[in-house]
Image (cartoon, rainbow, N blue to C red; front, side, top):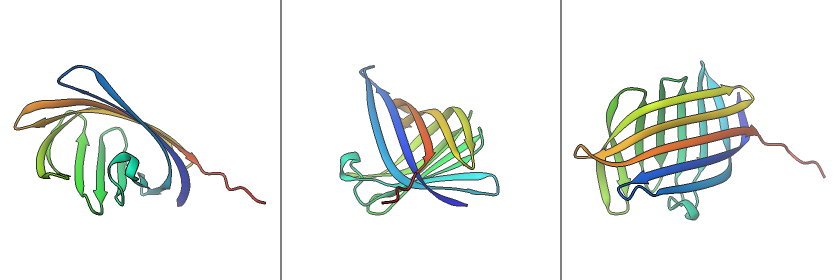
Length: 146
């Protein structure tokens, strides 16, 4: 099962200053289910700072979300509830190894779409960089007939 979907993403980042930075995006993408694991993918744009990059979320229930970016910038972040992972993250300034500590993952996904919420902390050299929360809504894209 692969479907064309409309993906709504709202991300909140709180860094050192304590002032939340909210990012919202609505984009077209693809959605699939393989053996109970859901995949959400979409192409980034210049507006997100990742022009030409494809982002894929692999959702394994309420226990693990893997975010993979491929293209001109690549990265892989593993968010697992209650665990810290060292992950590769590529920026325009070079590559970093960041610590990703998964705090909470809530999925309400089925074959028709649904919602995913997760939050996590990012650290570099064990120093907290930001607290992050992401809300994603996946809805089947309706095709119009003229």
